[in-house]
Length: 193
Image (cartoon, rainbow, N blue to C red; front, side):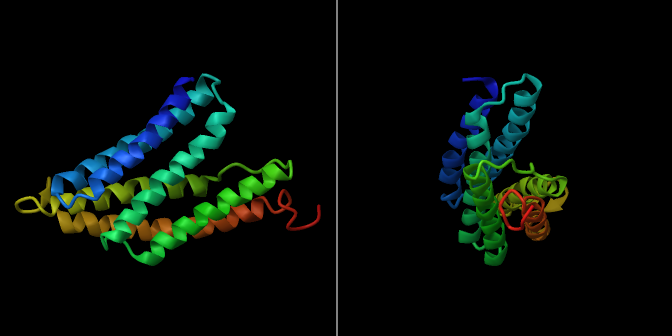
């Protein structure tokens, strides 16, 4: 197993570890979960760069890397929603988009068609999520400590900033999802060539 695939497996392993911390209602557990999310998100950046840079792209990576990403984001969103830290509609918009795009990829592969890779807008959506989610987790944890401040920011402000960022992420999810469907319409036989 190459380095890129090991990083993908590490990201998958980090998801249940993060979830174990999120189910505990202690401030340090939320902070730890936020840090685990950041580490997992960084492994996503690194494994893609390693796979391309060292020419270690594999079928395992092509299948498991997007699955690991979705697992990380979907589990995080559901836990934030469970703790009433994120609006249900934001959670659902992002999750539905992820499943629709995954379905499009599977359908195109089943039809033997080449699909257009993720757009810059889709990548921006992912970056925005990778900022917003840990902001909410860490902010929630910090809110239980003493004065509830992280450096010079109030914990509530960190959580609110994360929620606003996730609102932006939901909008980007819709726009990038529609753009992805449009870019892949021929591969999916949505219109005649």
